Length: 54
Image (cartoon, rainbow, N blue to C red; front, side, top):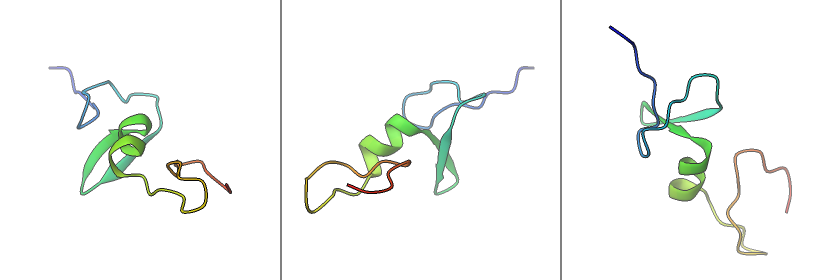
């Protein structure tokens, strides 16, 4: 049996990749930022996982 570790939204394999846990479910960075990222009030762009400043 092969163990799977996939993004909860797009089902892409997360082995060896950055991911974010939300409510005990793993998301790839792209899906997490698309679905859950906050938006900068100044520029209107999503605030990504690696964002330091606008």
